[in-house]
Length: 236
Image (cartoon, rainbow, N blue to C red; front, side, top):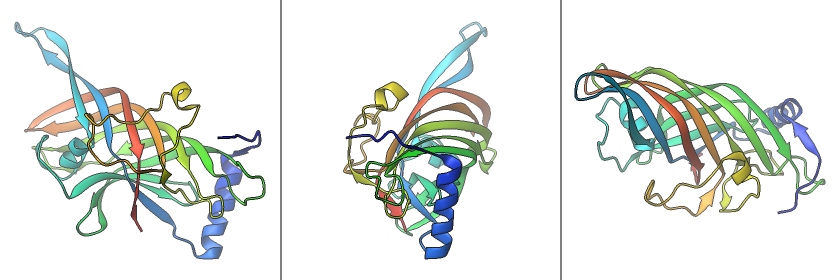
């Protein structure tokens, strides 16, 4: 993959894309299947009641269950974690997608800031064909007092592929990016998520804090590292 040296800063890219979306009547946002896995760290108690640090692994299905008010570990084949991204790259949301109803059920987290730099492989195209971003997501209160999300945040950094003719994010056949290792991005292993990987729009990693209720117990879960794979398009 050959890189050009011209970098387009987020303000210029976002403004141009937003104008294109409004004037051309293009789709304003797209939703992508987004499996994830993360390391959770929480306050626990030892055998004698002394404080110890606890560790657990959480995946996208855990976020979906908490958002819908069901216990962690509940099997789900229809509702999945997804990422909704504006075509102008001015906003993004983590959502629960209903595959059967072909719709997004609830918003788990909303990006309160989204900064992007883009790059063109072909100077003749109107838009970049790839971008890197950093976004800060605030987690919404969802679920109930037994099982739910009560707050927190995730700060996500990664890359996204974009259509050089429209500027919209798009999934392509799985590619490799020489900067993934440098930036700390990696694909999920099959053991971490069995979802079929054919198309991919991007990769990312994140840190943050989840405030949750699990089986009636309130817990603050630190997330020192998580990875996310932005895969095939679900909507529109």
